Image (cartoon, rainbow, N blue to C red; front, side):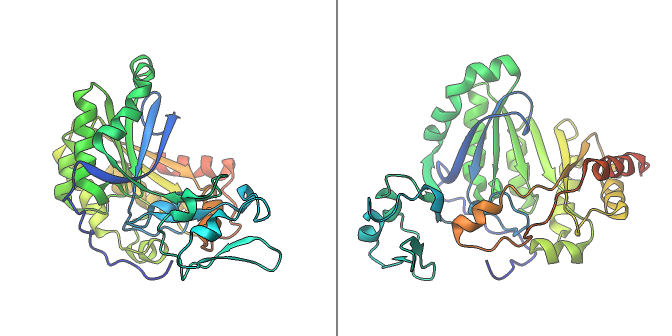
Length: 318
C-alpha cells in the first residue's frame, strides 16, 4: 500500500446506517472483552500500522485475497480464468494462478467461481439484522460466561452509524457490548457509540507524534485527545488502554514509561495493558499481494515483556 492518510479523521459515511461492510465474524473469542465473545470486524481504517493483523480491513471497499495453498490448479479447474472479464487472472510459467493486481477491480466474480475458496472477496454488505442473527446464535454462551459482542476492524468507527445501530441492537437483546478502537475518529462518533457500550479497548501505540506518523501513517494528537475526552465524559465506563509492543518502534523502557505516564495522568479509572507483537497477519499480506512491512521481525521475549510490564507499573500516577 502506498501513501499516508493525513492526521484527520475520515468521514465515517453515516448514510446507510442499517447496512455496513463486514469482513469477518469470529466466534468464541476469549481475549477481546469479558467472557466468550463474538467479534464483528468492520471494514475500513484510517491507519496503516506496519504490523497490522487485519490488513484486509484497511480498505474502505472489499478486497480480493488469494491463498495459493488452497488452489487446486487449472488442470482440475479454470473457473477463475473464465470468470474474470478484466483478464486480471493469468498463469505463471510454472502453471500457477497469478493475480495481476493492477488490472483487478475486486469485483469478486472469480471468488464466486472458485470451488476451493482459494479466492475470497474480503468484505460483504450485511444488514444489522443479518449480523445480529449470527451473533445471537451463541447467546447461551454469553449468558453463562458474561460474554457478548465486540466490534473490531479495521476501525469500527470508520462506519460509525452502522456501529451504533449494531450496538443498539445488541443492547436491546440483552447482549454485553464492547469496542476495539484506534481512537482515530471524530469525537462525536466515539461519544455516540459509548452510550451503548459496556467496555472499550483503546489502543495507544506511542506518545511520540513523529514516530507514530512514521510507523502508522498518521499522527497521534487526535487519538490522545479522544482518549482524554473519553475518560472525562464516561467515568463509569470500563476502559482498557492497550499498547502493542513492537520491536524497534516502542519497545524501549523510555517508550513504555512515556505511554504509562500519559495513561496514569488521565482522569477516572482505566486499566493499561501492554501486549507483545506477533506476526500473525503476515500471511494475509501475501494473500492480498502486498509485501509485509516488518519482514521476519521477531516478537519480544517473555523476559523483555516482563521487564516492560514492571516499567509500566512503576510509573507514578500524575
